Length: 351
Ligand SMILES: [Zn+2]
Image (cartoon, rainbow, N blue to C red):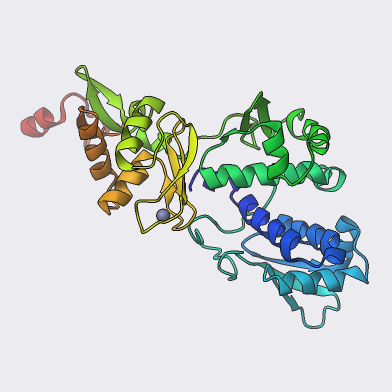
């Protein structure tokens, strides 16, 4: 699940689970203020801990002296935050946003669990989006969580499904989408049923979880030519590969749930996307691309080993990692400060 790791988006999956918990288990009368307060804390949270004074909460959420303590108690009851009153500071609390899965504060130094990373500084929700268009925020959060769940920024969602995902009506969805799509830097792109989550910093496409930036350094031979292993990442190959690994898989379905092969799985816990070649098991938390699957299968941390096995599967020769390109040259000088040039070993021999 490293697709959104570098963009800080994974936190929205956290928020999403938190929001769902509030919706499902929160006290109905407090639900609105609890949701608002939770979103504010998620937004303000960096490294999992944040100090927020009451005035700030009032200003950004519309909560009051009456509703704030209740919302705070509600979030603590739902095990979504820890709140500690700061000594001598009146109304300032130090909040920790908890990992909804573990109930523990996030580890500021690294990944925390398979599907959750540290709660990063949430810079993606602009104040305008948060305050003026909460439904858009909800749609965005839901789409990000789904993308994070499936390890792909490309989702196949009809408007009806998209609305259901966000727990809103299709009419409400229609009104919420322009704020996400028609922005200077759009957050989502929708063409018919294809929903794409965009890089919130550039508005461009996000890299997929297949780690292509890294994989271009691994090579195999194709008609005598050195080719990056990412060339193997095609929907056709995904079908061949996953069909042979997952007995339940239906080759014609782009997205489906099958039984996970990494543990005893009676219900289909593993989501597979055959267009992206990605998979994620909701039971054991494992997921990634084809290489990750092979690594898990071989029980290895060695990426080259996984690529070697995949290359063998497709009948191509694995060449390994290409040596890095020359990025800088340094000219050496001899004792008389003349630049040393020409073939080094010859100079050494003559010297
Ligand atoms: Zn599993």
